[in-house]
View 1 (tube, rainbow, N blue to C red):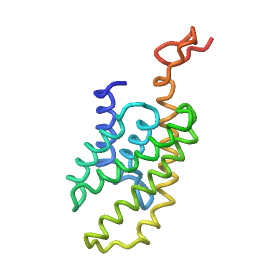
View 2: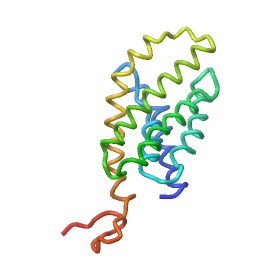
View 3: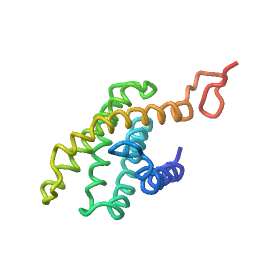
Length: 172
């Protein structure tokens, strides 16, 4: 995957998140597709796709939704750090560390956003951030698992497999 395809994927995530997901999500806090995509790309790729596009689309999200400019971008970029750190110690084909990095990224994102808003005088308390955590943790883990299962076959290539086709394994 190159930067253009990753950019198109992040654009689709941003578009769905800002137009559709926040309006139809039945629970209190809608998941951040941009955070899940940033974590997934930081986990699966050895390049900085997730980090770069987290910054770009985080700034777009800030322009559209936040009062403080840069809050979402910083939270998304810092959310990529657990995935990049765990990738060094675990096999990228394993989805469980990816889900763990999604949980850590969710915690980092929620508390960084709340902390910055609290420093600049937002009336939202810590209880609001903590109350949304269970829904966000579960939804982000599920979304990152689905992204991992969807992309792992096309990203990780096994050079010794003689029946490989388009990066995935052709069975039979």
